[in-house]
Amino acid sequence: MNRSERLSYILRILETDKASSVQELSRELKVSHMTIRRDLVPLVDDELVKILHGSVILHPKNDIRTGENHYSLIAAGAKWQEQKRTIGSLAASLIEADDTLIIDSGSTTEYLAKCLPDDRHYTVLSWSLNILSETVRRKNCTSLFSGGIFHGNTLMFESPEGLDMIRRFRATKAFISSAGASRQFGVTCMNPYERETKMAAIQSSMMKILLVDSSKFGVVRSDYFADLSTFDEIITDSGISAEYSGIIRGLGITLRIA
Image (cartoon, rainbow, N blue to C red):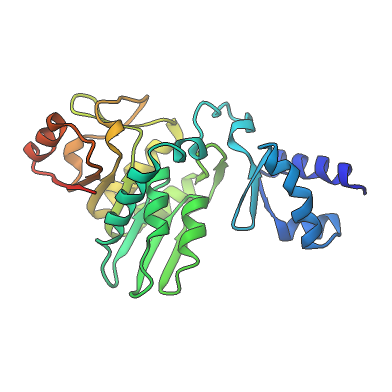
């Protein structure tokens, strides 16, 4: 099989199986890991595939199997990066020894995962490829993962079995993301399949913490999953308006500004 044939094969595999790895592709194509990595370079450059710590997926903007290409986690992560980084760092500072944590999918929660501490033990339950790729690297972190159907636009897995796992889990803290936070219409997300997972995470957690950059306040997306008053704390950046600062504090919610 020549290089062009291997590239076509790789794209067919990803379209069928939704995700693979360098190791699996190497085994299936009977070539070395280095050959696969060289083959992937033009696919990455042309934004046909995305590589995350050895996992290979279709680039979200080209994944049209489920009609979800209206939203891309990778594109969202390119916006408000500094604000999300400071929010993630502040959220990570709240993690205590022996905490049991839930970390939701999202571009802001990814920055939390990147800032996870190494000097204490804790447990993290997650359901997103980008979060898992960070937690498994932490020597004192016990990583749990609820699997299911993979959604390339959010890097999230979900299934009835995954929901059952989340509902049985008990977290001291849940870090939840959202695409919108409105006083009148509540906290919302972009995709219907996210809703039940977020609700299960909230119900399984002692402390509910919303991580959201200031551009999301006043924004309403299609799928409601919680009221603002559901959350014990909200962590955002200094761009939050005086109006929403007042609304949040008026609800008795701890507001942390990164």
